[in-house]
Length: 367
Image (cartoon, rainbow, N blue to C red; front, side, top):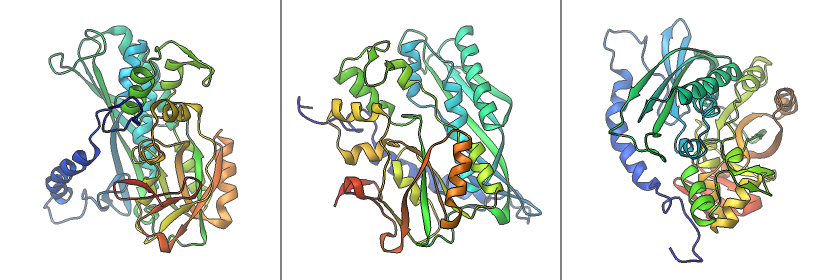
């Protein structure tokens, strides 16, 4: 990489294209297991196709069990660098429960899996503190989990500090009330809910710019942030469960929810309707995004594919119900905006008008 070259996700060590190809091979087998039960009934079988935000099992009598699993990712390396672990448990909860509500489910419970290079009681306690706080925010129980000591397989920032943290969440949903992006029309609107910074995505690129390229220290104060690098990068992922559940309970005609994680606003396309989206307004994102882009000379195309860029959650909703939904979100402290609308002419695409970007498939490009 030359001095003037912009940093990319690939150069930061994330091979998106290779991962997609490998995923296809995995899913070709695992997908067959979605209907592996052969007792003659539909009970326990998956009723949603791959690509939506959660799996849903038919439990009979119109009852569905929604399941998701996700991890904190390389944000954990920042926690190791800062020797601060009391928020990553919130991230662990958030990354799964935010996906659950995207199919209309009410999260109920989750389990965690903690793999460590070396047992450290203080680290365990801090992680537990975050899991508890995340459970409170998501209104779920954590009845158990698993700890694995695999020192020969993990390598931390410091000797013995390696770890991984993953969660699996479950929720309930009536099968006739699933939210899967059906029936979206051009009369609906797209609402974007404010993110809390980077959340838990793009940390390989973020670390590559902030630490390697800019040479910032983990405890260094940054004027743009108004606090230290660690304070910024360890801000926990926002949990959108309570406003999303209340919006549904209010009777608002929600056509789709989207958790904006890796792939950015392309997550809007995880729906069943033949539409795309025109985004004609974007709020100013948190300063961390601008510093990463400027410091790493990262293109808009790359930024909007890797990061949430200030929108952590989104809803496609009937225009008449949009303002009441936004009021509910604000009651929980979440600022939101009408950021665009569905368009049949953009099927399979997301057009970000303020940045002159169009996204489909594996990324964004200029138009």
